[in-house]
Amino acid sequence: MTVRVQTEDFDAGAEIGALSSAEPGAIPGAVVSFTGLVRDRHGGKIVHAMTLEHYPGMTEKELMRIRDEAMARWPITKATIIHRVGRLLAADQIVFVGCASPHRDAAFEAARFMMDFLKTDAPFWKAEETEDGTQWVDARDSDNAAAARWSKD
Amino acid sequence: MRIMYFAWMREHIGASLEQIDKPDHVTTVADLISHLRGVSAGHALALSNMEVVRVAVNQNYTSLDAPLNDQDEVAFFPPVTGG
Image (cartoon, rainbow over all chains, first blue to last red; front, top):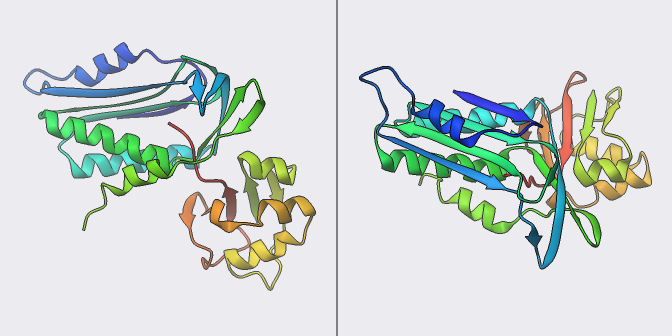
């Protein structure tokens, strides 16, 4: 079970390897992962870099809450969330979400759930550097809609 | 109390952290916002539209009617944009 907030890059392959490893007899049937990259274009403008600010303490707490909720809703045996902070360049890796499960449906859904709630609940903020200068990125309604899909009736 | 600001709110206010003694008339988050708006033009600007501000008390999301204590850490920040 891993939740990390860090400035340094991560090795997505190694993280998938860690999710895949298990004792004999407990090898998960499915590992699903998502890796987010810094886009080089946003709203028609070329993005050179972005700086990610966060709320130390609350960020880790929210990520752990999201991971725990995913583990309570689906039969996941392992889950990893990594998010980078500081200044990142276009094409840099920014976020990794992955989980292991005996079943692929659970792994797909839990990974999507963690990513959707990370986007709406984890206290990170992006400031993008474009040819027009540096600007804070606005939150998107579509992210709220993606998270709302998971609410139970 | 510890008051924290992030992203463009931090820039408007010119500080990421303020330590204040809770005024007696401040008993909820909404009271604190009214109080802070009077501190400076930057505070008033940052806290002018609460539709675009999220509030956390002791690192948990909360609402404007939440009660406050003198030892609380209160954070104000824009809707989050990570991922």
